[in-house]
Image (cartoon, rainbow, N blue to C red; front, side):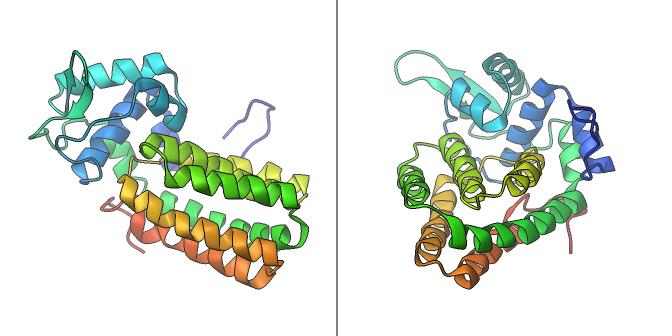
Length: 246
């Protein structure tokens, strides 16, 4: 795919092109609708605020607002006004109501490919970070894990999770690593769906384990934690997507 600097990414694939054909509004509609279809967002569950969703899904707040209005019309969400109001999943949401989810459902094989690429890169990052991370960088990673433990919703957790992994990459002290890893993470995050907060907080234990290995300078242990942390995405990410069998 062409980037702003005119270069071409090695991540180009038909599935990525498929979701890129969607408008920003439709990507938000598809991701939230698919999360409801897969049971990741439960009936009656309240969504985070528009600004938080926008930051997590890398779109504008007005895009989120338009997407949520459309999902309300489509029988998936409802808006409650007044004190304590907001947007929630309806008690009996319409299933498979947003045809744009098919671009994501068809992307299972590409998602697994990106996970494999991230696995290889992230193991190397952990190995290098164990040798080069400074005390200040480790303290910043500790702070991010603490903030993830108290994140109010999946949107806030996702933003902190991204900062954490970019922070580990920065701790390698190798600019080329950061230049390759950040776009890779961004490509995979294009497929990010809302996940239950309890599940996300459970993954934070591995973040803490990784920081502990980096602090000890244990490159092998750090790489092993990174391997386990990323490999589980093959079973946990985009559960039920067609074309995703390995």
